[in-house]
Image 1: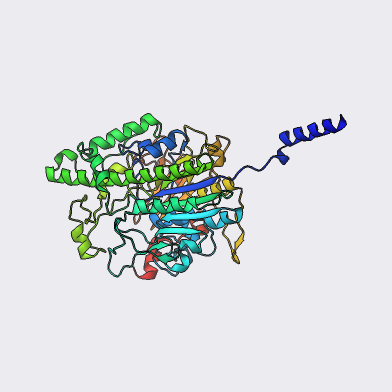
Image 2: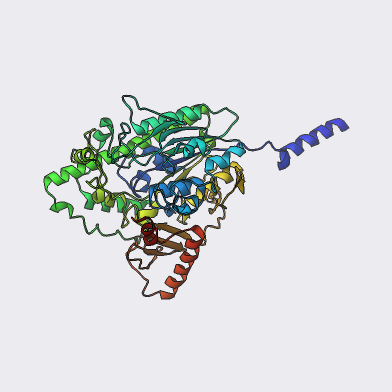
Length: 531
């Protein structure tokens, strides 16, 4: 009798004592980054583009409409991967080689990537897509913590191969640590997802994995598959004025924007839609059909990755994060830094697979609804990204959280999810402390401390956000403007003249951060190199 009671007691102790519970299974983590995609370009953020997979993830997950990137491709990637501000990681500007450590143009040895930090916690680590934080083989993904890699080492390329588009340029597609030559039928968005699916399928059953899925879509050139373009023929006949208004109204109805929000005026350099000739209208409609098709195909491949998770029985134990690396791109293909043949290709119809085109400000102004400005600037149009977090076992479903967060938070979040420790040293190097705050409490709907302030700098463009207030300046004027984002998210009412003390205090915050992060005033930086 005594023995039976003892056995029963021990059984109950095992059930109710947390210390004796078997450890929770670590979640898989997938980080998906779109390239040059505007704020309102997916359905769950107001777009007419068909993104059913992202929409379903948003419906059953979390959206954070006030999430920020670093306003440009490689700075964002450096910051996202390391949990540091881009200057601290060595990519304060682009991949331009400079002598200043904060601007050396590739990840330094005083940072670790998410992959490097997760491996000691037992994770398999994979990457597919665009790297763009170091072109030399010693700085490729497989040398920065990733077990497998397939993708474009550089910043942009034809979606049908790797042809250079600038003089003396070498573009590299790599599989692990070897250069890869695309075969017939290659389309980058599909190829990246093909390898990502292959990689995660190789994961042992008892191991969690981390996948960094860095699509190049929808970065120029505008290259899409015919069957995807066909979906959007005629979809843009209304023109940018009506489409911006329609997106804006949907965003307010969804709760992405406050009901009292204002739509920014059409960019002053863009004419009214009704003033265009029929040929101009057709050209823009064609560009937008191809652009939309690129995002559509990216969403299809996100669906393929999710289907693979289901087949593996891992769909309930995977957290997926989605965002864009900067605001929509205003860039055009011109004679400047492009090869003559590329410039000639830019004159072709966008749906011609031999073309090499971009949609410029006219497309970007729609993509960035409701904001002003674009990629490169620190206004909301440059730095605000649509953010979606999805994970059935971790992320509370159906919520829109308007608190500001930043790409520096992703590293800390991944380590928190994995129960991993951020290293103080790595391979004999002292590691710069991480800057972010874990988003896991936001995912679970519990108390979150957030940030005291967030900071931004790119090529002399600057900003600091503190609470609802944002201080921002444009290079080379360098004049501080002040906005209350709670009442003016689209930055239309400059309050700097009415709030001089707030401007002074926030500017002082920025100066302290800039010195700590290693920011060099852009005029000094370019003068030092003779640019």
